[in-house]
Image (cartoon, rainbow, N blue to C red; front, side, top):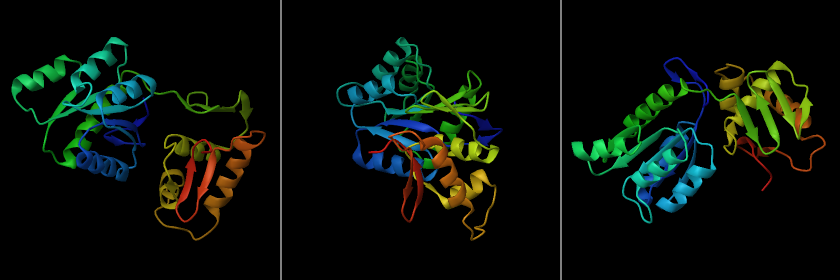
Length: 237
């Protein structure tokens, strides 16, 4: 589980959204993305279950009524496999009995449609805060790049990398948002705690040094410049 500051999100989280309604899915992906979370979307129950069992997600948000496999069956199979990932159920079925069935199936919370995005985000935060007490994430991994958060040790392909404290903070920020474009503003606020742009090459210099450190000797670069937007840490497509 990713770390949290008391009372609020400290970092973005990785969310799996299982929703067959195109408009609702677009709304949620946009809203969660604007809150700096990374979202993977699947449109039917079987695809959603497969991804839930394969991936390491901080949170699963699933509609209850889905093609192929309903949301409660997804949760039941996740729990049978021993996955403790918190699950927020979305449903137009809002009776007390429906809510009870959702929780008995292994869901952690149940939100009735229609709902306000602010409420969904608040419920997600509460779930993640509660769940983080049962086991904090201690290691970040993207391909063969690993960051041991307890020992503050970074390796690439088993080779330990010598990074400065600032470079480690920058790398952790990027790895927690792997696959997501990170803007200069996000880096200034999240890594340097600056709420203004100093109009210097501060970020460029540090990203360049970090890129040299982690990509040197590898045929697969992980840090990429997104022209006009920022940077993204992901395998080369």
